[in-house]
Length: 356
Image (cartoon, rainbow, N blue to C red; front, side):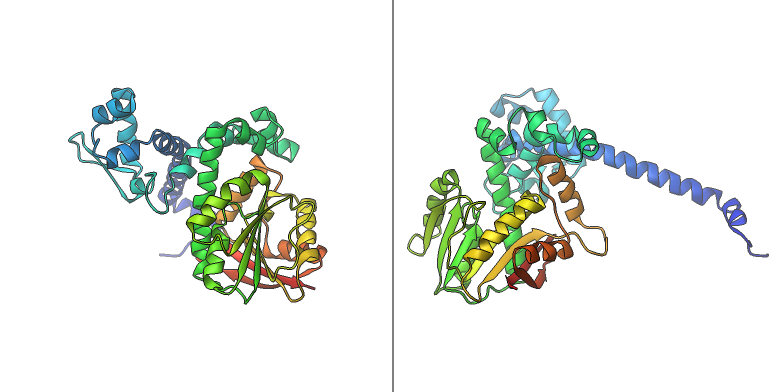
């Protein structure tokens, strides 16, 4: 038998293969559609504390519904779908058990993802994502307009419960990033460590655990610092950490040997980042290091979760995820030189820079 000699003959001899590819593509796209449904199912069950209820012994839809004051029939249908997407095990007896994913959606377990799924499917994020087309047409976020407030941060101040969930979600994300970074990076020797925009100081606490002779300064907005002291005390670091309130667009504490910026740069546009890094550069002691933790988009265009995270920044804020080349350029505009990029098994990387 002679082999096909051109593309037309190859196509003619592969009708079933072409049909199979089309069918697989159709299935993949339908899975994308169902992914939106699955996300809302997961977030809603997390928000309702259904996984906590199951863990406490309420294992049937009627029991959970009575405990949480829900409709048992509707809940059963959603739980059944939850078992299909891997959140629960349903043996057909009406009893629901938690899978490994379901366990991580409890409120009281280390590494809980409950708050993250809750906040991503709550109005503060879900409504702006529904206006992605408008965002693309305008080239900038329409979140403030959609949410009816000056910006996302004001929205969370006005919606305190959702704002608290957002803070919990960011704490969980921070824990993931710290865990990844801690396996790949050792902090350079320092006597004074300044955590810029450090929230409740989780990253600073870990760095100080690696530098027992160092003192720390946690720098953030007044309303953040007001609640950070309790977290610092819980870590047993009240004697080693000074909490300082301020605005990193105006200045940062001077004289530090190591400056930490975790998940700060991606929140802001390039001009704002130049201001923040410029203030850090001006405040640094001679020979000091800046350590920035962000999700980097690969320079070579290879697929990365950072690409999806970047669209979330486009939808929600004025910031973006960047490549290492783009970060190097931003450092340079602030008089800093990128000296090292530490990659981790996660989407997060750590970038070290010093004064140029």
